[in-house]
Length: 69
Length: 84
Image (cartoon, rainbow over all chains, first blue to last red; front, side, top):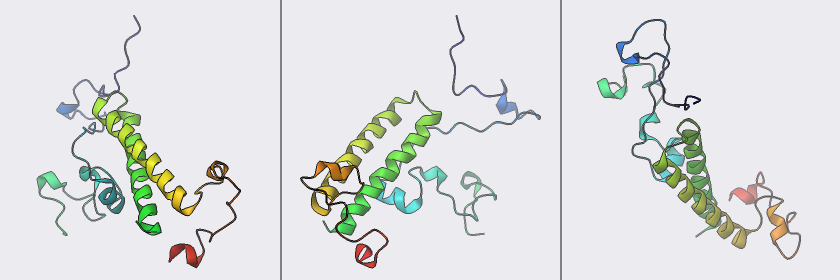
């Protein structure tokens, strides 16, 4: 039986182990969304993707990043 | 609703629907996302009809819905009057 395509299958069986040599992108999970008017203002409907240029590339919001450093 | 508010409403629904479409590209089996997508597309269609009913066709193909060919009437989007 042809193996059913799993879109979220990680490229490495154990991405959590952070093994070198594998690239992977954590799969976005559906969470809150902005209302359309706010989304148009922010350039995205997903709050987690609303990043200013100075936030991106520094420590992410979860670990205290995001303040105007 | 004023013309600019009506257009902004349409733009916001269209933008949100398109962003949800991008999410569905990588999450085709996400039921909640698909339900939200359908809702946003519905709102977008209504907003477009509302705008066109009051302010004329937004695309040349929409002009086909009217009794006469009004596509050439009114200011072009890049003209000052269209952005008052």
